[in-house]
Length: 303
Image 1 (tube, rainbow, N blue to C red):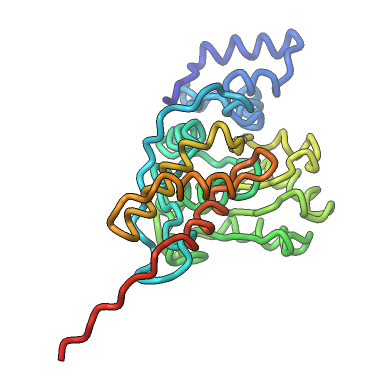
Image 2 (cartoon, rainbow, N blue to C red):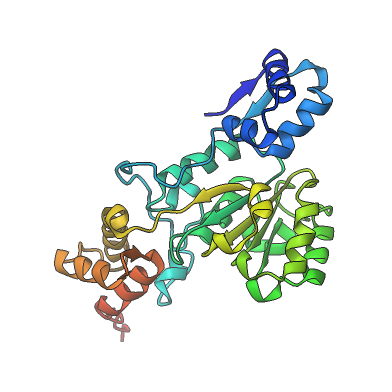
C-alpha cells in the first residue's frame, strides 16, 4: 500500500541529507525516484501536504512466490489465431508468475505520478504485457493506441531523432482515454548512445500524467546513470520459481480452448520444452502449447 511522508518527516530527511547522506540512498529507502525526493528536499511540500511515497522496488530475490491468483483474460481475438496474442494480458490481475511486480504496479496505479520504470528480465516473462496492462489501469485506451495515450517505440527505432520526437509527444494530450500517457520502449539496451544521453536529461523533467516504461533483456548494458533515473522492477524467469505459474496458465488456456482439462503429461512436457538454460518463457510455453491442441471440429451446416 502507499504511504505518506509528512512535512515534519521530510525535515528529518533534509537533516540526513545535510549530514552527508546521498539523495539516491534516501530515495531508495523510501522507494521513490530520487528526482522526486530531491525536488521535495529543495522546494519543500506545497501547502504542507504529505508527500505520497510508494513501496520500494521489488528486489532481485524476493523469496518464494505466493500461490497463483492471476486470472485468464477474455480472449482478445475470436476463433483461430496465435494463442499468445489471443490471451495477451490486458490488466495487471491477468499477469501470471509475477505477483510482486503486479502488487507494485497496482499500488502505483492507485496513486500515479510522472515516473520512469525499467522492466528487466529474460524474454517472454511478461515485461511488455505488464507495461500495456499498466497503461490500461491508468485509463489509457489500448485500442486507440497513439490516440488513446499508448505509444511504443521498437528497439530498432530508438535513434536520437526518434527519442527527441518521442519526448516532444509527451507534452501532448491524447484524444481518448483518461489523459494519462504511457510510452513503452522495448529492448532499451539496444538504443543508440546518443539516445540514452537524451533520456538522461529528459527523465529529470517528465511531463504531468506521463509514464515511461523501458524494457530490457540485458540491463547491465545500460549505464548506471540511466538505471538510476528509473524505478527498477526485475521480472522473475527462473524455471523453479515459475513452474507452477506456467502450469496454471497452460491449464487455463487449454480449458478455454477445448472446454476440458489437459492431460498433466502434456502440460509438463510443454513446460520442459519452454525452459532453456534454467529460464522459463511464458511466451514460448503458450506457443508450444498451441501445437498440442486438438483440431476444432467445424460445425455442420444445416441442410
